[in-house]
Length: 265
Image 1: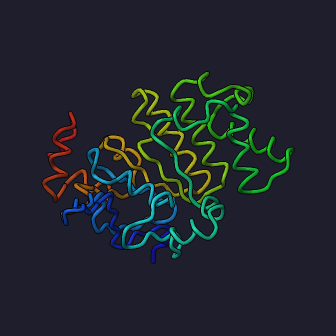
Image 2: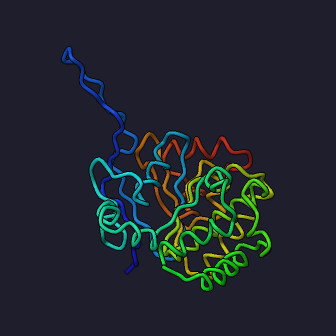
Image 3: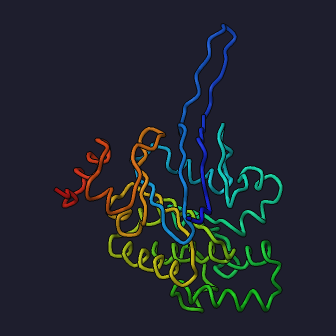
């Protein structure tokens, strides 16, 4: 038996749609179309596809930022939408998100210490001393020097800023982290460092990841299972080695053929 921490059940998400005075209507845009996936505890599910395929919309539904139009997103068997309405703090103690733009996702008017202390205070009610100790621990976990806590986000490189974003997610002590294109804004060498950090943190802290990216090489390097999305639907899913060695869907083969050196033969 497997331990499923997160599941989506035939999830649909529509944007917009309107009626006019003359009886005509503008149909809604279907961003996600009947997606059902499961995420096993302690593993990494990679979701890959081109921009506009619905993968980032899925990420926002997984953390309760968007309610599905129909279907359900369940965290440990409970509806994420219901958790978000009833007890958002309890939800955020279980699941956190790391965003694509490391600098844009950090408050430019707050120091790193203030950024990291906010979830410690709001989600866990830690006192000042406990927060100071935990901030020092978090900085060590993401391999940043302790004196960096008094600096502001603009004083950091993109890779350092993303480490702060990861530390902020860890501050909630979550079981599940949704990573939405977390390395796409970084140089290739920095990408490798952040991916290595994520793998180390997963092993040390028993984390579960949903890793979303358009970059197949990145997804292959970190994922246990892979879901391929196209136009809001899942077109292929399977173990990483199966997907990359013998893709079954034409769209997956097309994605692989567009990556230099990715053809598996």
